[in-house]
Length: 403
Image (cartoon, rainbow, N blue to C red; front, top):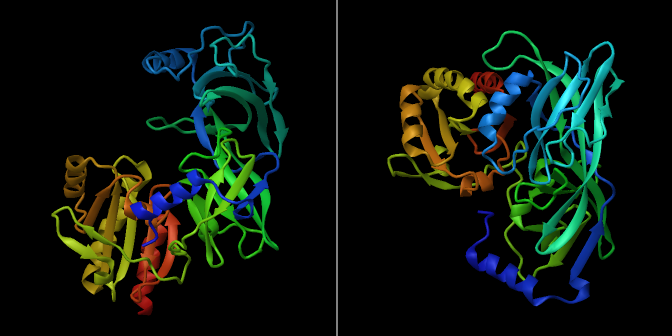
């Protein structure tokens, strides 16, 4: 199993702390950040709606409420929050309309006053209003004051929010960025990219990807979470260190060759693991060989996960007797709530409850929910998807028609 033992982790940390000769350290610098197309959506609210929600959120230290708004706002002005970077959740006001365009007043300095920040004008490109926010954040990091750039793309859209039937104005926030570079080990050059959020690149869930096969792309098997700590290149293992602000990547040759990790690509063997179900009974993944198996990484707190439950319940009833199985891996340790949810929704298959950083979650490199792996009778991965429960059900039906 490609998880580090305590001994391996100790060896790696010892290697870092003891220093090394210069020929075992390799550093590659990166270029400027580039916006990565991954986004969240923040609703544009009336002033009254904003104030009601701000009353509830003001108890949190990182939430900065709008205290001063610009004068001469139009009747179209809408208020919002969710502009998060530098440790603060900042407020904003979007003013304008589809014909005349939009202006954004954002609390970039996080003081609650929208009068002392320069307004941002949206550009109309390819049928959409968008603007790229460039700013710097200065923070104290381990006693040192550092300034780093933050780049966020904002896009005007309209959405139908939960419980409503009409569209309302919203801002799409693209805060995830990538920085590209190349690192040289001996005569070999390896292109890489660092993926971070809000200008930070070394959080546990941030990623570093290597173009090992030199195809100009980064597949899931070439992508590593920062928390994974090491990568195997050829016959050697390297610990990696990512600069907090994504300016560089450093690889350190380790004295011990560590275990590789499964590719998780289609057609590859699913990695073996064992687990205890909710009744404490021990199972091994190999026990399911010879059946079509769905690994469902989900949570009762996850809306799309809950929407898929009836699809999987129906599919399980139709094909279980023919050799179809599901293993549910629930993220979160609320055992009583999970058990109640499973019982109420007739989810009559084995379930595992573990934290987001649990062994199985790490083994399958889970980054979002729901995530599914469909496993064939021979133990190979047939497909991997994020949501799309209906498509998974169709694939299961296809498997039984062809077997």
